[in-house]
Image (cartoon, rainbow over all chains, first blue to last red):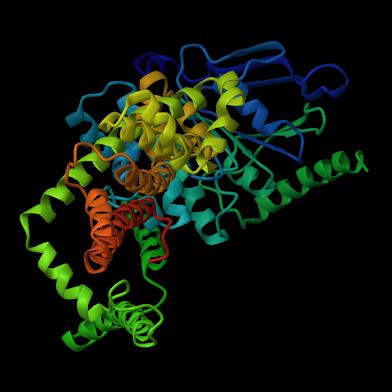
Amino acid sequence: MTTATETPVGVEAVRVDDISKVFGSGRGAVTAIDGMSVHVDRGDFLAVVGASGCGKSTLLSLVAGLEEPTTGTVDVGDRKVAMMFQEAALFPWLTVGSNIEIPMRVNRVPKAERRRRVEELLELVRLQGMAKKRPHELSGGMRQRVALARALAQDADVLLMDEPFGALDAMTRDILHDELERIWRERNLTIIFVTHNVREAVRLGDRVVLLSSRPGRVIEEFTVEGERPRRIDSAGIAEQAAGITDRLREEVSRHA
Amino acid sequence: MPETTERENRHVQGLDALELQPARGKDDRNIAQVAGRIWSATWPKLAAIAIVLLSWQAVVWSGWRSEFVFPGPDKVLPTLFNEVTTPEFWTAVQVTMQRAFAGFALALVVGVLIGLAVSRFRPLRSAIGSLITGLQTMPSIVWFPFAMLLYGITESAIMFVIVLGAAPSIAGGLTSGIDYVNPSLLRAGQVMGLRGIQHYTLLIVPAALPMFVSGLKQGWAFAWRSLMAGELLVIINQQNSIGWALSQARQLNDAERLLSYIIIVLVIGIVIDVFFNWADRALRRRWGVSQD
């Protein structure tokens, strides 16, 4: 944690070099990723878009260290990596507060300290006073905010997000975009955000990486123009998203 | 800037408040309505008892068997209440329940150990997984001759059969509980770095609990049946127990006592079942998977 805050901005936080990932072997083998390189600077917000089978989720698993690349290297230094999914995956038998405490229990944080930090994290995601609720009592958007608080409780510098707002209604999603942007800045996080929603990618990302499908490769990288905070319904976002969508359609048509 | 923060805050909280409000309003309940609810929950049970008693009485009235071998509720219920006030009755219940709980506890230990081993080691699963299912389908009474050969006419023979009857269900409940832990929870645990003992205490055990409780409930049913069979077959030194009281009553051709004890066995079964259902419902409510 301390090493990360001391690192000056502009230093690479995640470096994925020419990786490939093959699942299975022999004739049944599937190449999910082939020759992919992605670099993310500290404090950067990288959005990754692609159609089905582009290895988006595989990329995140590799960065999180849940899997090893077949070839190539993934380097996150000594940074801690947290991850969020489309489903909040909160433990239903625990209260919201206890859910957020889990990563701290793993890290052997003392109890009083855990309680204090749960309050602080809940305030950060604007769920103050919800510590005693159970996950099933919350709405989908609130559950995702709890999942975000839980991920932040890992003291991670790098946050990987796998379509985290994919299952939410549009209004909730827009609000969570604002919230995520705010927390990303306040906490100086490095984020890799995977989505199939091009507008969402342009709304959030400093850069958008477009991936090909089967196998996954980087087709093109776009730098998003426009001051933050952006609005998903602004003309600038729509225009940039349209350009990326065209490229994405070209790629999808290739598989017809 | 503080103004926009305040606005955003209100925006988020407004949306949360809308989401959290119940979709349907709830009526205020007064005493009459509470009483009505209690009544509507109770009367079907009372009606069920009435139907049983009436049909029982009807069979007696039809003269199918003499009242000597098949007495009606008017004879049996007073005998039952008489019986319940005697100290012998309570020793009998105590002995039986002690056996039941001891046997069930033993089955619990054996079942949990087997269940954990089977879910932990793959080869073991293929080897004895289906054996466990097979054992579950076996009527436990067929073990008694063998148990008596092994242990003689002793408590151990009864315990042996209770464990054989109940442990497979308990083991089965535990392994399926562990097998069906939601994969997204497993992934979340992995991402958070849950490892070793914490992986079990914080994730696997609580996640497997509802199915484990179902296994316990089923295991209890098998244990209770095995015990009743055991007490009828393995009578140790004329020791008082529910099974012994049953066979005593038969030998003395005391149909009234016989039927009283059958009712007692039924009532104990229902009481324990109510307990397991309560535990099951409490768990489900906590997990947020129940309807109410």
